[in-house]
Amino acid sequence: MSAIEDIVAERRRQIEQEGWTADHDDRHANGDLSDAAACYAATDRDLRYGIPFRWPFAASWWKPKDRRRDLVRAGALIVAEIERLDRAAARDEEIARSA
View 1: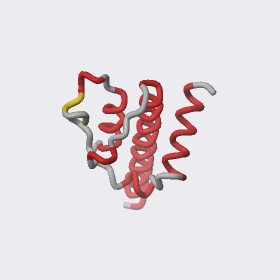
View 2: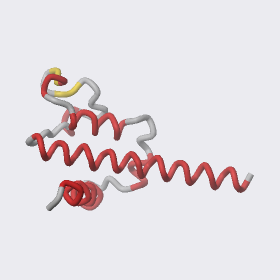
View 3: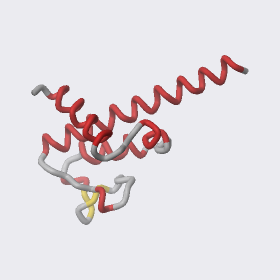
View 4: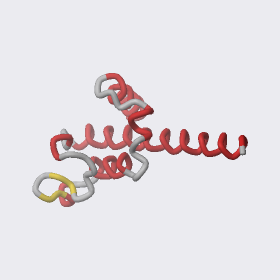
């Protein structure tokens, strides 16, 4: 599998197994998804007590694996954030058209 395919598969896993649907992701409008992605993409020097400084969720959700797997997770979280931004922009555009 290629890196992109792995990211797509991880995003699918997040949705299907973890339940992180579009509705769920849309509730994270304050940068949580991109902060989580940054944490998985960061190196060990960014850790404090085993959890990154910017980790936006409960400590129990911090589950690093190996370097490549963490980068795939980061990529999937970035995709989730981009999709969230696109949905928000579409909603804003729809509101502007109907005003």
